Image 1 (cartoon, rainbow, N blue to C red):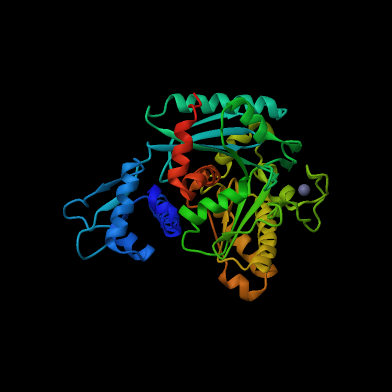
Image 2 (cartoon, rainbow, N blue to C red):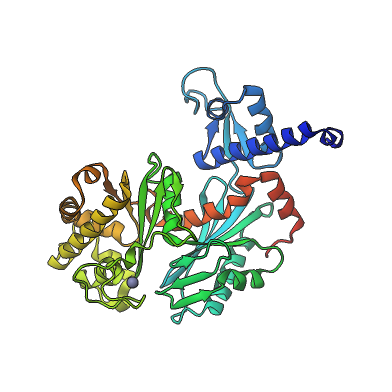
Amino acid sequence: MASSRRHGTGTNQEAVRRHNLATLLGHVHRSGGVSRAQLTERMALNRSTIGDLVRQLDDLALVSQEVPEAGATSRAGVGRPSLDVIPDPQSVIVLAAELGVDMLEVARVGLGGSVLERLSRPTPLDHDPGALADLLVDMAQALLAAADPGSRLVGISVAVPGVVNDVDGVVRFAPNLGWSDVDFRASLAERLGGDARVRLGNDAELGALAEHIRGAGRSHSHLVYLSADVGVGGGVIVEGQPMRGASGYAGEVGHQRFDGGETRCRCGNLGCWETEIGSYAVADAVGCPQHQMHLLQEYLRPGMPVTPELRRLGQHLGVGLGGLVNVFNPEVIILGGVLRWVLPLVREEVHDALVTWALPAPAQEAEIVVPGLGGDSVIIGAAELAFGDLLADPVATLQRVERTPSLS
Ligand SMILES: [Zn+2]
């Protein structure tokens, strides 16, 4: 290899090979298993090149190859049997965290996107960043201690209910945590030590990413995902790519002024949409006391009587969605968080308000659905962010990880 590098083409070939290796790993990770014949077709490379790349990923213990079960059709469909390439979920792992207003959830997620283990703890009431960082690191260490001894940790990501700067990772504003300009990434990195690569992302944006890759938005290039807890945020995918804005702050649809709204929002303004459709508004509409928010889902079970207040909330949801339909022309709007329980109860109210307020043409195309990943969209999205380095360059990332002492 050293001799070929003296000539320019060797370096180029090496770059192309690493690019192909990363692309192939991305296909296997996202599909959860794919035949070599499908890889040949998708990557437009010949069978022997695909075979070499798969062998290299196999040598790195990232994938395994299986002969399709007798009698079963290969993932390639009809034709010659083709080996299935399967991601190894224990071989490389990430830690993904979802920082909610009431709960902190941390999961160990394997290659292929499978949640291997998760822990949940109530967040400290004052949302003190230092106390939250301590808690998150404790949970992370417990999850790593229980991991397969051979597992390699390739990334750590945290989904935050607020706007996060693209470049420096600082949480610029998370009104429902009471945070302004909190460098939570630095707090975590300091506690984790070493070369810990911590990434932060906006919760709704990560939810949109996960639903696009693995959930209800899989076959769509234009979608909006709403995260809905106390606050409501939006993640937008346009032409298959996240729409992030100039600094990563785009999508804060919960802070749009809702006509007639009189409730003070935690952002300081009056009548933001999230005060009309967020979890506190939902709790009020169904009579769930605010000190029993953990029971809210019980009030929204299928078949529960629908109160007039919940019908009105459904209308307010539909009016706001109509605005999103006009602006983004999505194929699908995915309602996450508490709204995934609200939608089935007031689907008609949501639909009627939407078609009243949206223009007819974009309204015809937009389908309103619940997440394909249930309550896991955001944490799976955080895992996707944490896998970013590995999927960009598996060889370099594994070399770096092997040089870095384990977290635990
Ligand atoms: Zn607001």
